[in-house]
Image (tube, rainbow, N blue to C red; front, side, top):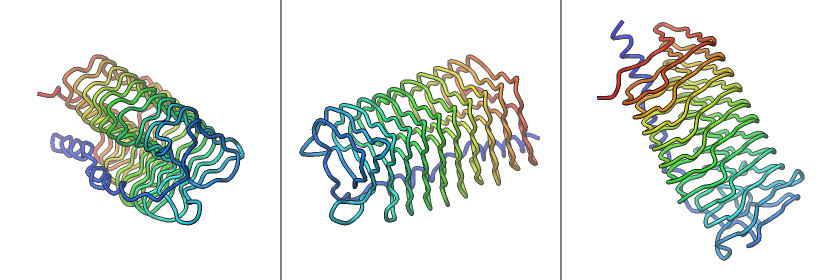
Amino acid sequence: MGCGRNRVRQLLLTTSSALALIAALNSGAEAACDVVPSLGLANNAAIDCIQVNAPNTTVTGNITNGPAGSISNAITGGGTSTAAIKVVTTLSGAIENTGTIAATVGSGNRNAIDITGIVTGGITSGGSIAASGFTIVQGIYVNGASSFGGGVTNTGTITASGVVRAVDISVADVPTFAGGITNAGLMTAGGGTAVGAGIYVARVGTFLGGIINSGTIQASSAREAFGITLPETGTLSGSIVNSGLMSITGFSSVQGISLRGTALLAGNITNTGTIAVSAGEAGAGILLQGPQTVGGGITNSGTIAVKAPLGTGIAALLFSTFAGGITNSGLLSVTGQQVAVLGLGRPAS
């Protein structure tokens, strides 16, 4: 029995090395997109890619893509960009979409919205965001920005399809991210050979707000797959709440909600909806690995269903403080060769 538990733990706690190995591939030369005017842009037509960049280093106003608007990653005059919308410098405003934003032209890395600069007003979409390509593909990508405000809210559809990696909303290497992430729409990520994830937050110093899904998140990959995952994040000030549907399919390290190496989770992890996980090797509904301090607890009053040879419903492992414990009043269904419905591991030494 002890060997079985160790094997489950080893496979469930595997660090997603593929994420780190392929992250560097997302950089590269970028052809020129049209520059957004200094007072912002309101679009209701079909246009090619746009960017917030010199000579308008600061745009004071919103980028609004209306119901009839369509922004692609094609470049005016020929060629393609890796993104349909890029913010390289500062957008003192918001990105608002009720139309279509798509980075689906050509191959290679593709991000429908690519943020490496500062955004103060966040991103809201009730329309369609789509990205597809050969290697790394992300619907909304916030990477390396010194700060990001206003959060990300989706009430429409986000689709990411990549041969190697696909993520619907990705936030990485940001000192401060404010406003949280909310999905009340449909998000689909097909990650091909390596990683598929709905919401991926990594190496963020302070994440102000929570992560809420009341819609549908579907993520799949031939290897690792996640619904909501936070590896190596400093502080998450809010809670993670699922009241919708999460359907996650992969082979190893397949998890509905997971935190790995987070220093502080101030709030709770709550599921009142459905988390369905199917793995060829190891899978978990909710997994906490090594948050140093958990201010709240884990509560399930919905459904968590895990199908995996090595499966876990809810597990909290290697923590220093876990204030709220694990409470289950819902349905936990775990099927496989070696299973653990509930697991509360030892404190970190």
